[in-house]
Length: 139
Image (cartoon, rainbow, N blue to C red; front, side, top):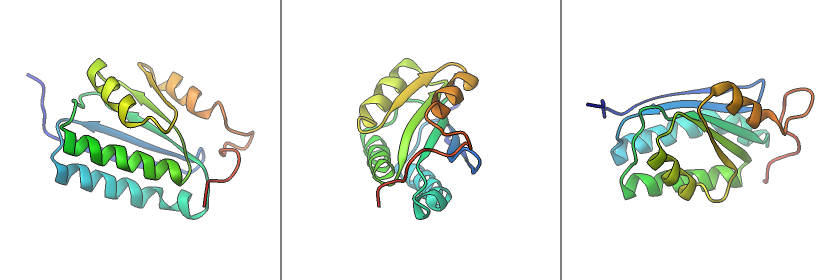
């Protein structure tokens, strides 16, 4: 049986203006809010400098979430899009999780991958020669 205990790790890649996260399990609203808070705090340097950024998410072992958690995730994606989110590459998601995430992230570019190298290639395809996203985020 699959381990449904929630777990996540979030890191910032300054060189490529990317947020990376891995997440697993079934979230309560409290866990989702903690994840969102940490992600927001770690993304603030990009937002404050108006640097467009992308997200790489490893959702291996993440399961479809209940409506309350899904709504919180959708709201966070929408806020991030308003503050410079350029695209999200997801690896390792189940078919059902892909459908749920795609529905939640209608306002941003989202692609799903089985391979991290391909996901990063797609994310970085719109980057300029120094590795930064082109343009400035919305104020």
